[in-house]
Length: 237
Image 1: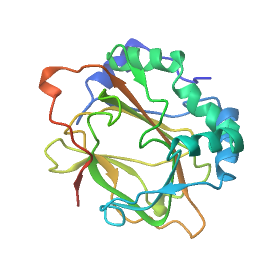
Image 2: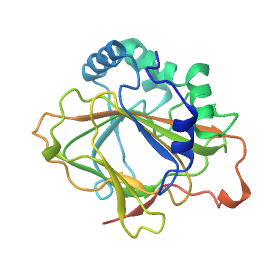
Image 3: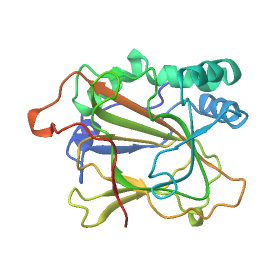
Image 4: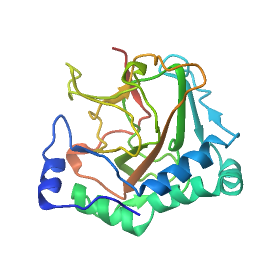
């Protein structure tokens, strides 16, 4: 179901990209699958939201699923196509693609989708610039790769919501990536891989910025990338 062929040039592009290894891939999955996934998740009713202290400041109008083991079972039952897409993105085929692309071997999927899965953000919503948590809170595995897949057949540029990638020292934004239909953004996760969409969105009320967020882990990582366990570290622009 992948709709993208790796080449040595693409692997080189990814691994040498600035400000940190990343790539933007359009038409990432078969179009029919993405359309079916959108219809499945738009009709799903059991969304969660962040109850933590930074909700409303750093994550505004952000909803997600699955948010618990029981909610994952609801997703399987009520949005089976959406759930099967998540399972596919954890499949050996996708893991091999990511390992070949990134050069990071022995990637481990997260079948609990901790912090990941489906996200939707509405008008005035935002996600502040941040680096992600570094260790899975349940397994202790090292978070290494993010794969974001956008599910928006219609998205106007003036609505905002672009994913921003920032310099490692937070001195400036380097990339602004529109969240359009079937576009994947893949990037390495380290303590200085800063990203987000920090400006309140201007989409009409009732329009949502839909995406899939998949996270991949390893049992260990290079010593120079290790740090004490932490959750997301936020930066307000």
